Length: 126
Image (cartoon, rainbow, N blue to C red; front, side, top):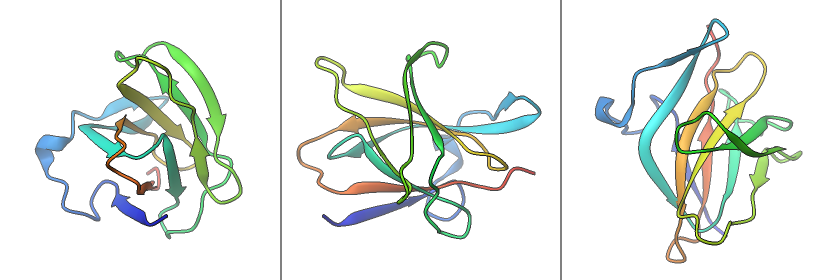
C-alpha cells in the first residue's frame, strides 16, 4: 500500500481558501481544514513536525458541527489510527490532538478508488 503525504498546513500546495478561520481552544489555536480529503479508508498516519511517527495522539470523530463526539481512539506505535466505516455515513469529521502540537480538524471521505493512506503532519503549538 503506497502512502500519500498531505502536509499541514504550509508544506504542500494548500491555499488560503482551503482553510477556515483558526479556532481558539484552551489558549491554543486549532487548525480546521474545510476541504474534504479522499482516502481508501479511515486510516491516517500522523507525524510530528520533524516527520517522525506520532504515537498516542488522541483522535476523535465529531459530528458535522464539531460539537458532539461519536468515538475516540489513539494513534498506535507507528502513528497510525484506523476507524471502521459507519454504514450510511459519507463524510467523517476528524480531530487530532497531541501535547505541545496544534490540534488539527479535517474531513475525510472514503472512496474505493483511492487506496492510499493519508499522512498528516502536525505543527508545534506556539
